[in-house]
Length: 402
Ligand code: GCO
Ligand code: MG
Image (cartoon, rainbow, N blue to C red; front, side, top):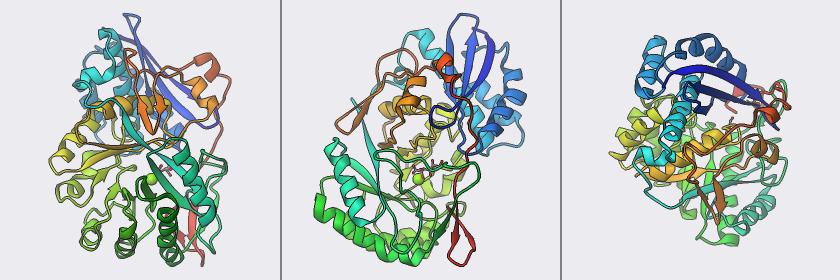
């Protein structure tokens, strides 16, 4: 089965997505997501200029060899652009293989380990009251796990505060929006939020929180400790994990479960975190880390150290990534949870898919492949719109992590 063509489709049905479509001489095609939020065009160029020319004529069944060719062959290795381009190729090839065999993708991975996939939604509020109410709406909608993010008293535009109900979209402007940050205000406020959430909603619902890389290790340790009475499912990205050793300090001080990895590209970013058991959940997902071929390796390695998966699933990961991730989640033995930020109706229309939400779980269908397609005619009606992610500064103007 030869690859006869490959095309990059850029569309913006409410937000930007980059999709790779690979065609074969047997009429079977596959699609993969290559979206890198706020830096989309860099992956388009990488695919068009450097990847597509080497794909044409190759045997589409040789997924592993093509993965190794693109990874080792790049010489420069790793990084968000390279690994997203590789992910798009990899997912499209798994899609092709599964379609050609007439099987849903999870069957190629080893079959179902579970019926459905536990997901968490995003509840956002501008203040404590708003956030308590927003979490309530998610519980009413059937969610068993909810991430709570809130505006911080005294700070404008904190991370995670959405503009609409049930949706949250950070890449909001052509040039980066500037937000402000103060860790001490945040550390004082957050335990009061989780105390109120537990008081109002009880302890059955799983609650999560994302620190979005803003704390130092000592501050993260303090936060983890102060949240212990509220039994979090996890505290995410408490500190930037470029320095994996930093998690030793956090781990020594708190039993709050720790999750990290949505910005990781390969197993090398998580190696020490996993083998030293410094984290509980690895957040790396399909599009970020070279596709199913590599994510599967990260998950197997993590399983040795009792680390479970918690794939990133923000709206900037297209329904193609969500579909592929759900097949992975349905199979992976050490599954933890899947993030599920709903896509808009416009996005869903461009990417018809067979996964469905029911009572806090997502279920994959049995369509051969990963079960997600792209309506190219509709996609063409939504041209690319330049958008960038916000940045953050401390109150004195110093640049900080958004
Ligand atoms: C999450 C993430 C996202 C990111 C986004 C950036 O946990 O869902 O932190 O919301 O901010 O993916 O593009
Ligand atoms: Mg996050």
